[in-house]
Length: 208
Image (cartoon, rainbow, N blue to C red):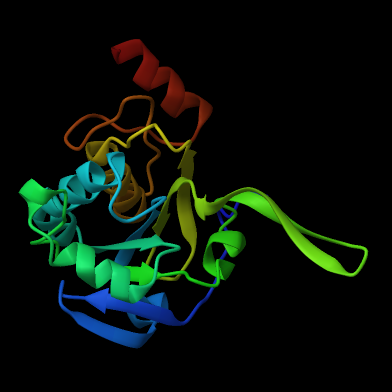
């Protein structure tokens, strides 16, 4: 079931912060009342599409920060593997230079609770089994300052994300919060929004 409109699942897990420090009690709760969060899952460290996305998030980090938003990544790898990848140079396939937190979902419970795990567990004849891929899809969640999920999307493993779209969605969320208007198709910052009324829609459509 969709998490949109609901409180984001809570967790406490190991993570690497600032690209160099392992902590064992990372939680998104630290941002409640302070920051919006883009929380994204990716399949695996030391892979192919994943570093392109992570570097793309890093390249836009200042844009997110201008919008009072933090970026947090997560995969089912260990925090030690995260750290090894974070200290591997970019020209060797690493993500050296990435500074946003990287969460280690080694128990796969975070991926399960956000419903992005690429497979499922079953219990039969007294034994647990797993079918599918025991790694996360490319799930992306925008969480507001109250801890409520405002956007959720999931890409299959080979399909990389468009990072600019999340900036656009945050702009839209901030516009709605500030002005009480709704944002029509293809809306971008600086374009007309509209009132959520029949008259508002008619006025908007008549101009576009």
